[in-house]
Image (cartoon, rainbow over all chains, first blue to last red; front, top):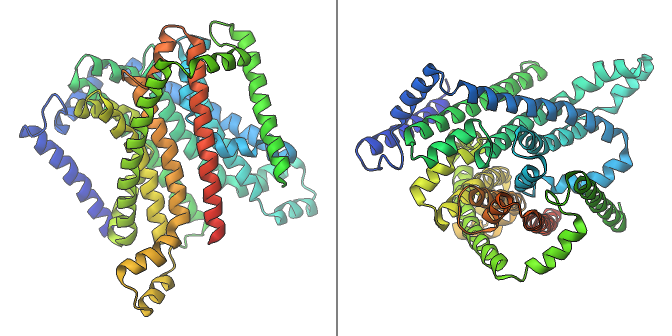
Length: 252
Length: 247
């Protein structure tokens, strides 16, 4: 590990250690924060007992559905919009403003329309995540070098072959940026929706534990979600790095 | 692209959104989603009421305090990590990792520490805003060409002169992008906080309207917030473009 990496690890360990010490010594009341070690033990017990398995499956399932929808649909819409320059020009102001307005405040409206079920959660999740994928697809297709399409014409490749063997690989890094953003946005939107109002799920579980003053359970669940989010983000980041390395032919 | 064409495009989008709203209203019915025209007339009645003014004032107060806190801390962290190479190298991945976490799950923690009043909302809003401001400020300072600093040195500028006449003008456009994004996410943070638990504020108004099935009220408040965010962003974007062009 590099020196910077070691220092980073030390900083994080020191922060957790300081929190543990402050909680154990009573500097921070147990009613405010439980010690990190206790969070981990409670989480372990929860996981082993299987008490939260159903909620984990539900929430992670919803997140996967939202992300899959957003990526597939977002890519398709991106390709479609890219093929229609006039439409794209008209949509430009919308894309420029989209992430500047709090889309999430429409969640209660969606509940009023669709009722309290998984449907509003999926809609708000896809609405939050899909536009990042559309914008990334447009960016990627813009960056395909024109020489590639010329090469395709010289070799008399069909539309599909050109798209699959030349355009898609050339646009891939931008598409991956879209995937990363969609994953992150989808995750955040689903958890937030569950947390604000939902029939079940991990977000709801945390909100309930908070309302019941069940701090141990609440902190264990929060820890779980933070760990999952960190692992997912780290995996995407690692994948990205590896890919960039391969593209540059191993050169730094 | 001419300005008129752009304005026409924006109008077309607004018209398309209104049409989609009308269609959704037809499907969902009056009780779930009132029609656009009905909402507009309701808006004219609602805005002057005491209830709206009180909640809007509560949100405005929390949002401005959160924004001040987010900007102050975000700029301080950004300048520090941008100027001090090792701190930046150690801290950036940590900030990026925190940035992509669902911060909403930390709201109960904020509430336990700061209580249900205005301070909880303010801290939660600021938590959202600090990170983009810090990350973009750091990037802006790192991107300043070293030759600027060398010329400042050659001209024997004092540290304060260097900051005021070289560093700030060079970093400002990108820093401003951070401030714009910080504005948006801080607003979202404050509203999320209000939606989850708060006695006053437009976010809590939306939630209580939903529970009482007062959809006219709910949709009106949502639209007002939506319009506020869109207009504020348009103004900030306009300033940002001017700053970028000047450099």
